[in-house]
Image (tube, rainbow, N blue to C red):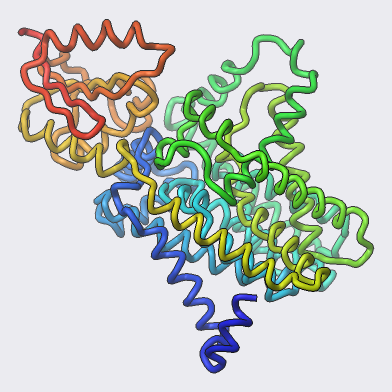
Length: 516
């Protein structure tokens, strides 16, 4: 619809696919680069990845693939975290273009490609997750490539680009957990449609997947079974018994996460800050959930219901629709089964890999609505215009008092006060306490002892054998209600030892001396 209108007004320009590609990329990049380092998310994972990139290739030789990809980005940035928002914006803007190409190809409809790319480019939730540079950054790209190659195999009823698919799945298997759904998607698609696969290609494909994971085993052996310990600790955190796991709550919550996330994809809810949108703290999660509009929930259920019914009952074959539907079912069953045994693992970021799927489902709904109603064109145009306006308005009202910019100012102040003296680092308060170690290294003075030593050593840096120095830096942020009493005791103790302090935004920096 939008493309048709623009083509009518500017026929020579907008008939060009290349121009439309550049147009989508440009608008997606502009809305994502907004805010720069001030809105760039910086917390525990960013600290871990930055410290890992710093060590490669000196200390880590074999291991998960993603840190090596990340280290390339850090090398381009010359280890400067302020370049990372630009890299993240470029990658996620390119994802919007990929949504266009994959959408119009697998659904064999330019309208779906255009609608989906506009939804992905302007969604405030999609933009929020473009403020990170982690495994989530490449998860939608991996999904889109998987959709595209599966489409080629189903379209031509033979194996096409199987080696490329193997490379995508190698990355997916060593990416964040939800990327494993892509391997299941490939397997289920093959079982259902049984496209011909030469034995030689199949052997190469399987060998790629097996060999790529040998590096993880070697990494584990070289790093004191770091992955194994993390895996076991994760499962130790699961429910102590399974008596409550087979009730309806798990099933209902597995269902709820999809309309809730789609609703937030269409219209952001919750605290208007990047950290408030991403962090999984209980109070932030509660705000995000209770502020979702009931009307949007109903609309999301209608869209999902329409798509599911069409996928199951419509005899007219649509390869793209079936691929997205199968992935949707896999994501739902995966969440349900995982929580059946683990319990309470319903985090929105699990569905970031399915964000392109959301755009295709909505675009499919809009295309059918446009076709079936007399004034469908006007409705679709108005709906997209309202969507763009509201999401842009939301985007330009978002702030972040705990992003890269705010934490950098706190670190620079602390370093200016202690110089090159040895110090210990502590951070107290709520879930905004993480993300300082790498910044201290970047600005020239890494703490000899840190509040993260127990969880970061020896994987990300070596624990110091030196005695704890009397000089310390304490970062203070607002505590949660649950830990308020304990926080007040710790804070009062540090205040008695404080020699200098400064409030930088919502972060209070204390320079303390244990000998005071």
